[in-house]
Image (cartoon, rainbow, N blue to C red; front, side, top):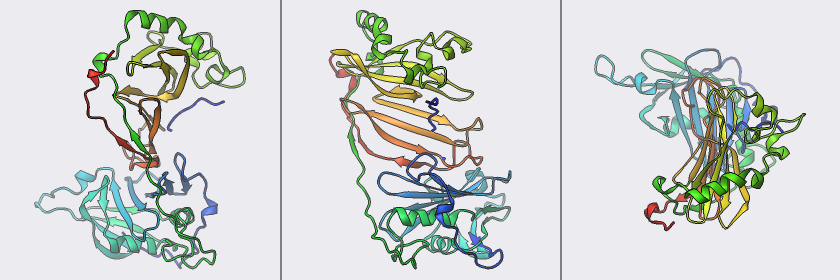
Length: 386
């Protein structure tokens, strides 16, 4: 078992003659997991509601980062498109002559007009005509450019056709009037409707000032936690051949013994969630620029069987456990995940990445594979009886 590293994100010039579309089978990856379905410079990530997001980037050749996002809702003809730049606010702010620098979309060396600098979703939003033209150029070799008075950015078309075909397949668009690139395919599908978001009623929890356990309970938990969880179990501690997912909870594991903590060795932490439940937490692993904590839920009346929530968390606060890890030291691509307390369990509420590692600090977009509607409780958590 490998160690968990949760990670876990225009005028187009015709290059030569119109090319055949690149079929989605040439690409790789699951659209509903992690980085999604990837082909060259484009990726497709879909969530549990069947909304898909296709993101494309400039060539990974050291040029200034630029990206385009296409938001594809199921059973809808309209597509929403955005573009983003590494220094968006600086690029399109007031110029020295007090005029706003206006970006324009070029496709195949033809100007399709200015892009609204008001934007949205973290980028600049294309209008409906511009978006339709981008989609219409997907099946040919194209040059997608964003131009301003000072600069030209080029978004790669490599992989665009493939990810749009995959979106057609996933959302049941193939052979229908809703198809993005496969309208004439004889294998006609039935368009799929959107799935409802799961609804999570977030339960009351203790405020930060009420999370500390009393001395007697804390001592009891500290004395027994390693037997309740069985820190020597193979899934946690691994074996001679396989690494475990949480080796740092076992002081006798090779990983623990050889680990350079550079400070005090990790210890168990206990957090009162409410009057009946406690979180146990311990550092599980640490890498060059990421680390993961294990969280277990303890039923105070039956503490001998803690429920594992994750071994890759970053922190807990106000009824939410969250994890955020970058895929490389530059920090231009991240994965994140959150779990919310519903009164009985910490349930998955959101999972996403920020797109490919293409030079955007913090990532270019939010590309979820799981979304939910969390209904917050507005009562004061510190009024819960201890």
